[in-house]
Amino acid sequence: MQFTSLSFVLFAAVTVGLYYLIPKRAQWWLLLAASYVFYFFAGAEYLLFILYTTCVTYFTARWMQSRADREDAYVLANRDTMEKSARKEYRANEKKKRFRILVGGLLLGFGMLAVLKYTAFVLTGVNGILSAFGASGINIPSLLLPLGISFYTFQSMGYLIDVYRKKTHAEQNFFRLALFVSFFPQLVQGPISRHSSLSEQLFSEHSFDGFSFRSGLARVAWGFFKKMVVADTAMIGVKGLVEGSAFTGAYVFVLIVLYSIEIYADFTGGIDITIGLSQMLGIKLAENFDRPFSSRSTKEYWRRWHITMGTWFTDYVFYPLSVCTPMQRLSKWSRAKLGAGLGKRIPVYLATVVTWFLTGFWHGAGLNFIVWGLLNCLVILVSQELQPLYNRFGAKFPRLVASKPWEKWQMVRTFLLMGLIRSLDCYRDVGRTFRLWGTMFTKFNWGELFSGGMTSFGLTLAEWCVIGCGVVLMYLASRLGQDEPVREKLARRPVLLCACVCLLVLAILVFGAYGIGFDASAFIYDQF
Image (cartoon, rainbow, N blue to C red):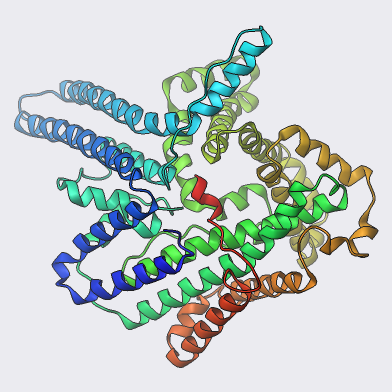
């Protein structure tokens, strides 16, 4: 059941309607049932995997919580007889035991994800090595990749880590935890939520709120428009450019821009549907985007794009890795051997490299995704090393650096750089991608674009107009919503909001998946 299907629209409408008709104490039960019905229609066999993750998460968290409770009770009961050093040693030993339980849970949780998502990648690499030595290869099994498995696995494992850190209390009710893992609006592509912020909202009783309902409905319609009109139209051109071997030089630049539009409209459109639908249910999810194309640096861009993923990797990978014992030893050694300046940066940079490697590998089991992650890392680290040079430049030319044209140049530069690296996602083959990058500087065929070339890879002039109008509308919505989202402004004027929603629906029917021969595709992040 895809978000872009009519069956999902009917399913969501029925769920929201029943949600406010049934007794409030049963609302979360309805959400649990709806989530499993949604997942059943996505693939009945997928239910086994999400149940497996739920069971691993539930029992691991309960085990850690029981040990933590016994630890606290023991210390409290013996606080007058135990010395401070003894209490500290006892807590340290108990923490080690809970850590071993955590590691077991993480291995079981991430292990299933690794087997399903990366077995083919690993065996392909092994077969390549065997082939080089003349040995026969290993048969590569065809494994299922359940819908949204990366998202619900990361959310569940983050919850386990929070329980271990005592930042959240383990859920006692299995069915409540099952809803946290499987909440259907965010199951497909996030955002990745924290138990401490989401659980209370899931299990609270919600009364109908007209303002939130209207604002959420407008956001859902806006999300469908971005996905089915802008993204799905741009996708036609992206496919044509990737599949055509003659599209080099200036056409690579067109792909960089076009794919940036597609993935932004696709991903933010899906997130708008998710957050909007949740808002209609009275549940506020974390925002996942904050006008990323307004970023003036790569580091800023990644604070604005896929925010919950970046926060997850920062909190659960980068920071723990930065302060772990081996890294502290490396820091001490590097400072002694290389000096305080360089020595203190090496451990941080190493943790950054590992984090970005894992971020790329999470996005897909392919060399192109790994290179994508490492290139983002390289740009960020080089920028940090060059920061003193940037500061001197700013001090020498303060008026230039403070000017609007300079700010716009930084935005355009960041947009194009991120689009360039992201093209690895399109071409897939790393060698081909690098060669095509090179043609932008060696093959000067810009004239072709303006003599029929722009309609030579699948997009008609009318479709270019659809994309252009969609980009203008997205830009205007972003600009007008800087102080307050446009949908919330419209929600205070129900008649105007109704008119805007109707116009969006009309645009979807005429220009989207149900018009001019288009076919609604799955969201790009469904594959993750």
